[in-house]
Length: 572
Ligand SMILES: [Zn+2]
Ligand SMILES: [Zn+2]
Image 1: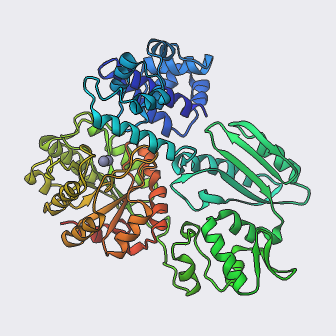
Image 2: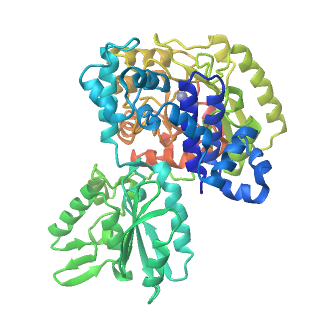
Image 3: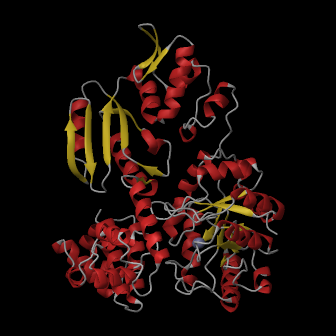
């Protein structure tokens, strides 16, 4: 698939154009990039089948962008992009990855200080060259250094949302080989961690099938380097930058190998200790008493022999699951099929890619019973935020669509903005008319702890606000949580009966696992939403559910596992 490569170039073009102060065009490129990222079909294939006309048929791709895609598919280059880069030779992606540093500021830094990349930027910030520039100050300099430190910490980790689609594709291919008897991804992918280092596959082969599997694995599309290839093990680097290993394991050891390679390290240390206390030895080869192997074929029998319940991979972090499994008290986790509808979706009304009707169609395909449209409101003007009048126009469209639907209901919500003083950017009378109201922070992220906490609590006290979206504001690999007193937030949520969101967007996953667990323990209800800006992003729900499971959540804790009538009772 060339889709991701081209999307990345379009994002960069958008940044370069924004830097030049060009109007509207950056938005068009960004929109095309989002579409390409979520497109299931390979653009190369679309082009092969229908030429440039077919490319123009992709939503969000106009004539000029279709030409660029064609050029890239034919020559591997886009001249327009090359020219932009030549004009301002900076590493745009690297620089704008620093929180708070947009294309326009990057340009100033290049023009005044010749900063081209992250290294230049760090040096300039450390030697205090930035603070004296017009439009910058000591605080920006400090923020830049913090941003760089944050980037360094998350280097070498990949978002689950980037990796999982690749893993699933490889898994399907391996599963369909006749030489493969069984295959599983292990490691942090199986535990559905929010970021992933590398990927391990375990395989049981048919007799004599090893060689075929090694050949197949090392010739997968997207491999840029083969680290090693033996008879039962191989290791490769994918073009996305992460490594994948495969190992063939004997059937009698498969369970213990799967347990071992799934991890985490902390969980494994604890299980090995339990084995030792019983006079046994647990390794990737099996559970042994002296030289004799007792069990090893399945994970279930390994855990059972240790006197434990089988532990769902998402819980294997040695955060209390060992003790619970020994006592037979593991939670009954929410299932990946328990969600009945998504209440945080954007539509064309605020600049999202799809019409309400299109998003609804996907929701129906996913087996949902309801869907809530929650477009941005007026404060977010770049995202075409809706005002009171537009909201009531949207209401009419939703009512019309609802009158045609059977066994499905569209709800009208809105993702309003919590202003710096805690007020909401839409009038109460208009909020009252919505089925539910989401409020979120989209500005002034760097407030001091007490003020930020008060700001959110004030929003919760608004009698119309039902849900707080992405409550801690973190962006993985980019921005830390904002400063809040989470215990205070939990207490206020409980008092005001406000629902906290688990946002499934791969970069957000906010609340995180620890906070989810705290919310559950405090008796605060949560909702798992996707924040989809494109209909296909409704499928991100899987990541949010995984996160909820990692936070020990049960079906009861999540309001959108309920049928519509019961769901509505949770709203003020
Ligand atoms: Zn938001
Ligand atoms: Zn949103």
